[in-house]
Length: 311
Ligand code: NAP
Image (cartoon, rainbow, N blue to C red; front, top):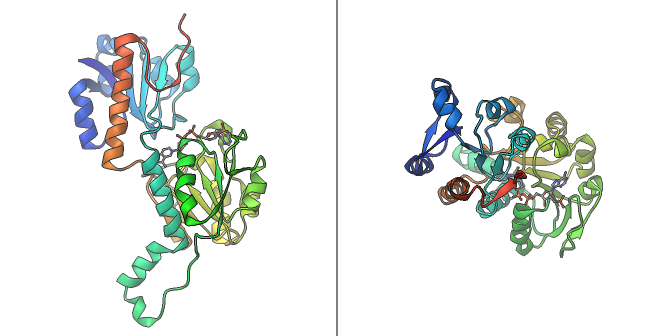
């Protein structure tokens, strides 16, 4: 059985699977055994845990960083490239779960489902009717970063009778309208859905100007990364109601998020659970392990995000 550095925790079933195929150690454990630390060739982690430069530097024989998740914005890619370390993620297998969550959050936001639930439980219903909400049908929906997950969301949204458009770095020549100007997409959208990657290129992309274009009847759904949104601008827009509301699965500084969100009645908040179903997390764990097995068998990976050039 191969030794790995494990960074972060996994659900029990996934951890049992991992432990049946690899011997996992924490960095603290490896620091107590130099021979073991020097022999470790793989890291297993999850996309919401960081793999910083300093950790990569502590493992002289590292060859692969396998992250369980599709985002890899918290991995020091430069350090990995410098050392010719392969980085892998788990694309595709989580598309359905994340798209389903997105549709659920969108409907929960437009129909105020969390508030409606509280309304019934608290007995407020006896004192009057619940306020009217908004239809999804007929809305213009803009998707920012139309990749694997964004397309799954778009296909699921079509039967609701919405008009779709998208923003990204390129026109993908699809059946939906491409908009090369993010502010223009926000201006023409009732709902803006974020599905782009995190990282330096997208940090703060949804800023005060984009939120102003979305306007007082506009809704924001973020299932991408907290970093994509200028969070103080968003908090301001929500509290002043210069946008109508937001459904957020991802935040800055998770899980210790800005508590000002808790006081807002125009948000739906979930704890970064886009892929958090039993079926999907097991499929992600399986693909993560298969990437590691492939690397140990022949030096290649099944789903590399950045295959280091080998000389
Ligand atoms: P993907 O297939 O790589 O799609 C990302 C899309 O974003 C691409 O189509 C790309 O289109 C666009 N993009 C890239 N850089 C951009 C930029 N600077 N500005 C605008 N658009 C840009 O990735 P995916 O599998 O759909 O996953 C997307 C993201 O979802 C992940 O990176 C992750 O952060 C997030 N995610 C969240 C959860 C959760 O639990 N909430 C779960 C899974 C994934 P162009 O090349 O045309 O620009």
